Image (spheres, rainbow, N blue to C red):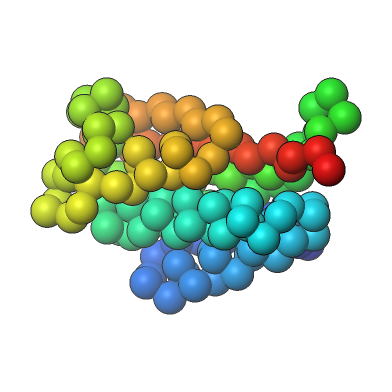
Length: 137
């Protein structure tokens, strides 16, 4: 971890989920997000970290501060070299799960954040990027 507003965490064990949540909470707090938005960001990060652990086994979470048109934001990127997602559209449907889970990870993270991008190739891995912009007071 370089500082609160940017860094990288390897995801390889279930305890890395706690480390990722703590790092994201620190970054979101430092950027002045509301308590509600901090909770949304941390929840999305938790779901996406859990997906890496569950489906790929290992991966990485990166985060950094964003600035666009006078607005501050936080970008989180989750990358792995796992099996990939064969049908992203299907994976984005609430309730769909390839592992018997609740199927809320990807669609839930999308609902909690302002922007989401997914790039995936079967057999090569997946990268999910999410962004949340701070509401102007």
